[in-house]
Amino acid sequence: MVNAINISCHGRLLLQSDRSETILRNFFQEYYGNWRADQIDIVSAREIGYIPFFGSMIRHRAVLNLDSLTEMFRRIVPRHAYYSTAYYSRPEDKIMKDKGWLGAELIFDLDADHVSGAEKMSYEEILKEVKKHTERLIFRFLMDDLGFQEKDLKVFFSGGRGYHVHVVEDSIYQLGSDSRREIANYIRGEGMNVYDMRRSMQEAAGLGGGWKSEIDSRLISYISSLDGLEEPDEGLVSVFGNRRIAASYLKGLGRQINTNPPSRKIELFSRPGPLKYRYMDKNDEKLLEHIISQARDELACEIDEPVTTDIHRLIRTPGSLHGKTGFVVRSIPVNSFRDFEPLRDGINEGFDKRTCRIEVIKPVRIALGGQQFSLDPGEHEVPGSAAVYLVASRQAKFI
Image: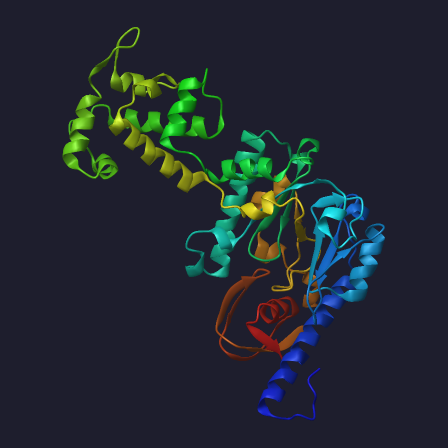
């Protein structure tokens, strides 16, 4: 606490700030008093880390079991709580190379840091946008393209601005950073370019699935939409940046190509499969580049690549509270993900047993727990969960 003898203006501000932090810590202490650790398998092989309310990051801790972890967090009341995605023979060792790495889960972290335009979005808009990326990651990439099943995935609301997805299937534990980077790059649509697309399609016996199939399907759809046009539309003009070139390209779709049997270019390019990629000219490549860019913009997942490639990563503890929001790091069944609403399902309703007086620092407009809050700067009385969120996120302080 600030020395109360120093009653300067600066000292009073610090004292008030510390008092607000202490009240916030009391809320967290109440939560952890009824909390039990779960969702972490073989916790004795995990490194434990946390950030206390008054102090800096502490890590390289180890526990015997989930009960020990429960008791630790009840005692220390962390503002942020973490555990390693890796398993170690000596998790408490402070030197990473001496921990005895045994394997690691495959982790995907999705939040606003990698979403284009996030700096102009509200918190609610950010959460909606990140959820779209997470949904694509789970259902399109991990389950469809990579073939993982629901039982292989653990999904969590991070308590902050996004989601964590853990892959816990046996084949992934021994993957090194380079292999994990390849997976991350695939999901982010990295390395998809005209040269690689043409080369891989010419070497392929068939389409397969994933990005190649998606891009081929989009190319076919686009070429088919040009059939019957006498003049290029604005979309085709924008692809080439020149109406004359677009008109020339449109006319060229009617020419014969020396396939066996011969076919018109538009017929060949409207069929699935790799054959058309052998007959592309520079204008076809420009169109293909446009299709690839469009597919990447619409479908790629903006994951935090360093998290995925780091085989020693600490991740937020399931069921713990996020220190910048007071929201719960909530486990979400895969089949319920689409119905999950973070500003409804992420709050701890136990905080609402009482109301709190807070001083709002700047205007607040947000829906929490099904209630819309529109608060101007000044004193307000709000439910406990709203008070915890606003104080933890530095938008208010307890009175």
